[in-house]
Length: 483
Image (cartoon, rainbow, N blue to C red):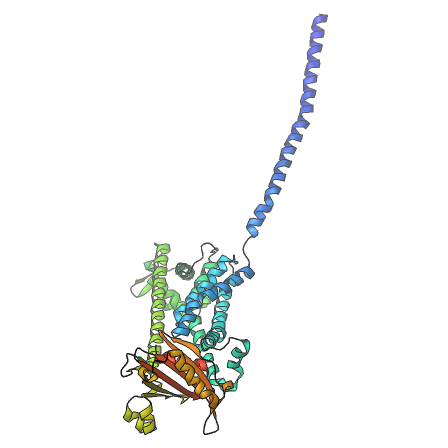
């Protein structure tokens, strides 16, 4: 009996001990859970900065703008080459300026936001302004043998004697800006549409897809309004068909859509086959609604793209035709040589003894082989003389031009006669020097002498111009003759 009691007592103690151990174990498990939760929190906190850094790394307008400026000037190189050497402003090349600006913007991690279209537009226009008013004139000054300095560049705009140069630059600038705005409008619109649709830096492009998507979005909104109006008027089946005027009145009165837009909404809904005709009246049919809207959007976008291409072709064609018309003229081959001169419509050529004699006198007819005048502004006269090489008794090219310069130097004054310089007009290499002289009318004039060598002859070209005609302008005139 006592043994049984002791055994029961021992069992009770064992149970109490186990219970106590379980109670003691619960805090430990709780502490372990808290420790695990703490570790997870610390790990999440450690990872959080990376997430924040990744989400906040959206680019910068500042770095993007710097890249756009660099890219815009790189894209302007074809424009500059065509302007300088082709003597033309080609509108389509403005696309390269805008494209270069946007590519530079992306490379420099520019922020893709609402400010991007404005940045591309402003930088493209600024690039054209700087190129037209500073870079191109600087290149022309350098080609004329003058040092490219700030004073020489500013003299084009401040010196009253160079008003014709300044006017020409301003005219080119106005034309360039008009062409630039027209050329980049479609690109900027495409970028703007893509940004509104949530495009990122990686997938934003110059394309018509975004415009198509925007068109579809606008058509969907129009269709929704028309659909609501038809539901309100109970014209969602053939039995409830109403007149077009009734639907238009509903759109104007209830939804505040103006008359012109209401007609457009209805026309687009009819074209999308959502408004169907029943005995002269219309009802809304929602069958294949989404598909029909998408089809209409593609039709409009493709039509718009075709129109854009057609207009671009027309503009470029008109520019080319105008340029050809302005620069077209006649070709004059100098006798006894294969030298061809391009005489523009703005020039008058005297190339026979009789023509020169009647216009200038017998002495000029005996001395010169051709004379070219500026027909439009009467700013310059060009006198050409062809002399056989045998007359110079074997003297070389450099010696002949040096002797000619030295002959005039004591008469005119060495301080106003330039050094001899090399000139290149296409494949034609020449020697040249220039000087100023006082005319019989007490006016100061500019003279430029060019010497060109063929296999059998030397061609002397003397240009006499008003003092306000710059040297680079005269070079361009001679370059035009030999192009």
